[in-house]
Image 1 (tube, rainbow, N blue to C red):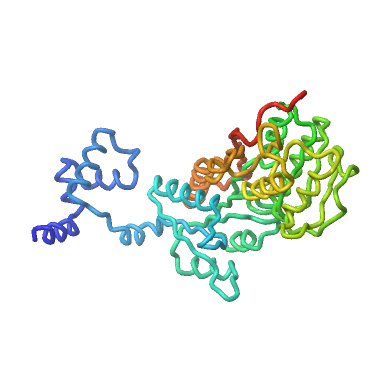
Image 2 (cartoon, helix red, strand yellow):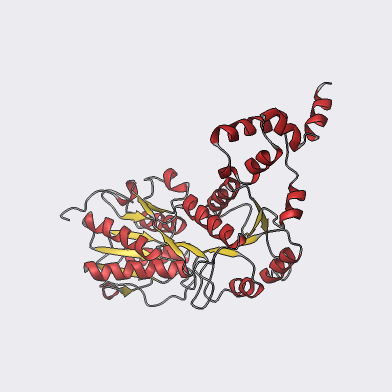
Amino acid sequence: MSEGPQRARRGAVTIEEVARAAGVSRQTVSNALNAPQRVRPDTLARVTAAIRGLGYQPDQSARSLRSGARRTLGYLAPADDPLDPNPLMAGFLEALVDAAGAEGRRVLLFRPAPPTGDPTAAIDELVAARQVDGLVLADVLAEDARIAHVARLGVPFVSFGRTGPGEPQHWVDIANDAATAAVLRHLAELGHRRIGYLGAAEELPWMAARRAGFLAEARRLGLAAVALPGAGAPAGSAAGAGGFGPGADGFGREAEGFGEAVAAVRAVLRGPDRPTAFVAGSDLLALDVYEAVRAEGLVVGPGGVAVTGFHDTPLCRHLHPALTSVRLPLRAIAGELVARLLGQVRGEAAPTAGVELPTELVVRGSSGGRVAGG
């Protein structure tokens, strides 16, 4: 019974009461809430303790009316299947919410309404309602209509993925080509000289960069490399003895009962100069390589075919053998995005160049030990 009045009382706590409890002025409490760097650490600790002890909740709507800021960042969430969500983007969203929260901001997810699914209309609606201070975009494609649209609107924005020449360079990304080059060097150090690559559709800029990094490093190291066309691409000639060579391309026709990617890898594995390792452009594509290797009566890892993935999603640790993969610095990416976006919101000079962050190769059992004689 005593809980109700206490809750009502807590909801009515004023900033003046916090100031009295902490033994400071009202302005000091305001500074502690809005500009804590201006407050001495011991004073800030006292004010924070008083806020928590009294259960004070700042009036965000009043603060927004005074400043014009909503303290909310809009995230245009990529389309996804709730029964089969993208684990990478789920991890990115978690990191983004944490990074925004550390700056006293919330993240508002939104998505284009059916049936048209027009992202520009969804952006217009959000901007017109003045619900957010700026936008975060992801999965940025070449000549992305969303980038051109927000640039015309003059809305503060950042993107996970690089924008094109002539567009605002408000992006944060990873070095996709350098990441696959590092994977190739790891495999070469283990003695592999014939290495395959399996990627997705190359209209995705990050996949095109991963493939390009693989092929360029293979040429530099003098390795025999075969890069299969992206999943969903038209089948080319069947891979055979002629399909291997520095920078060569080869593709196998789909086999009965197997998906296109699995069939392509199986065809290459049947050749006389089959690869001893495969680099996959994602962890899910690495699963196709696992399936193809086992369908051909081979093993993944030591004594068999080395396999690597990309993204280091949780499934990597649960495969047998565990999958070597490229880990993205999701927290660093999210932190950089929020910092660059808030800089624009505060009216600071817009960045003239994007920022590229390094990845980490996490080595596990799937890349195996040294190749015999390597």
